[in-house]
Image (cartoon, rainbow, N blue to C red; front, side, top):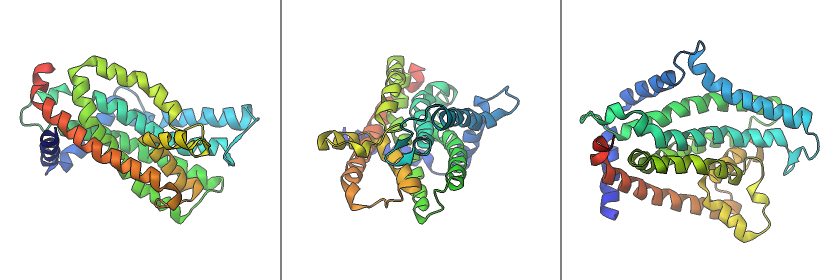
Length: 275
């Protein structure tokens, strides 16, 4: 597995050389295609999550007034800083897994680097995420959170989040193309991931040290907590209180690179026959 994993990783890196312009064009086209036929087109990529945020604000700021805070922060602000990365993460996980099957026309072209499919699909989701992040930042500034030097940590967490879930798709996209059951499994676990990922609650508030450490195993928590550290907690990436979380995340990240490279190398050649 180790040799296949390394070979797969090197293959993916090689397939991306000189492809940046093509990937960018395909990412924009993918975003446009998703909303083809709609008068406002890709603007819907911002309208849909913005409407969800409005509903949350109305529910917790106007409707439900009891217990309207989490860890000392207004509940809407707390959820806003968790929802924005979650919108991208959920799209990256589900969309990344579907990417090869939904773009099967590229797989049959022997000259097309298949790993680029996952990249441009995730990049199109990142474009939407950047727009939503701007909306979030404006809201936070209006209500008194920032600007702060800690906000610059966004430029660490955002690219890292993109790369992490892109690497995840190296494994999930070929496996989902190989088996629809695997794709259905991913869809099935998304609701569970949502509730385990600290969007509505603070994973740092757990008193049981074992459970608290187990929460670190979920990499989604790393990014959601990271956005909160950058925008509302104002805590450094390398704060000594969170070194365990940092070590666990990077251990998982390195392992994921090997797993993703392994499955891509193993399934790449048979994808045209499968599709």
